[in-house]
Length: 273
Length: 259
Image (cartoon, rainbow over all chains, first blue to last red; front, side, top):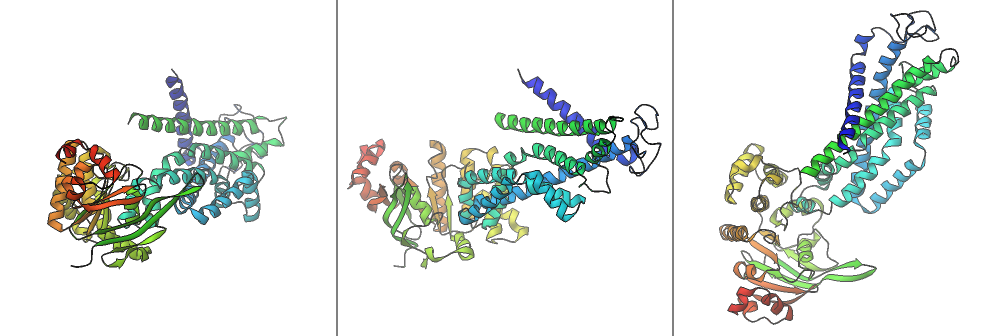
């Protein structure tokens, strides 16, 4: 009964995500030139001039150019931060679960420590100290997001390491590190990867929030930065904040729905096998 | 007579269950000569699989000594232990669980060849084909994944993987129990043939006295973690001394009639 509805939401998600990826990839073609360049008179309202369909901001920068190039930053940061946190998380989780004993204790207490500090605060502190550049922002977001994957990976590894195939690998004299990362980790990954859509969505939001507070990469257009920019003229030109806000909502929704649909399809396939 | 291949004495392993400790294996001693099969029989929970895992050093005993090929087997660790593991291999009960779910027939057999550098990389493919032929499988199977082949074929692949590093001793932990009867007979025949060809020794863990009778030379009967009776297969089956041996015998009707 629910299946068609679910696959509809999945389709919507995938459509949004695909559109977003296309826009991000072809940004230089859709809107050539520097998106930060002043191209028209300031505060041009949307639909007034077809050269600038969504209008311009306080300095006369084109809103379409900002949105298109902002999609690049959002997706790049979201994906990179998710990949980084999944990698850090699964390596630490695998080591903790596989080695056990005091290593497990130590790694899990570190994980606890990171989980106790609010993620956004951690990212904020990290960026303010290390300076706002894209790699730092990615790392800052990963720093607050790796604990989830680490816990899931550890739990999965704990159950996998008792299985006979691990005993069999030990019997043939395989090195413990090879057992951990070649035998166990690939089998522990599916539930960890299921977290990725949530992490990408959260990373996009965190990046936007950092940019909103002025801690984004100053050389790049970001949606968060655009929203912040529009705040000063919120009464007279609300579209400057609303339009990038809508883009942000769509991006997060698209990533989340597409991710859910993928996970669900993978789960159904396993169920059928 | 030369020293036995495997010699264990006073092997003890204690586990904690609900706060109190109990001995899963209690003061067990065993001897296994070259080219021989020693069966360890007992009801479930008697500690026979734990004993197998102790011998394989998948578990560390709390007390006791194990000598393997004249060396103190328990003194080995790290790289030396991994290197020496080539000489003692195992085949487990559930052939599906004993392989990495992502493994193919080829990768499963290639692992020990690579780890113990049995053959140069260029000859590995031929070696795998040769091992598959020796266990009665078509080398064309090598590209299949483990879950694509039948249970009997899987167990043959497990045997090929165990043989790859040229072991002297193979621990068969209920290796035929999960197979259906006709396949079980074929796999036992294969194991017997390999033993004759290579002078292999088997430590054969089983609960099935009928299979043991056909396959083993010596028997150790376990109950509650202790070895309660040892002897040649014929002696134990024709004249069981312990209560548990008589119970196991009664559960194997064909032997019972004969006895």
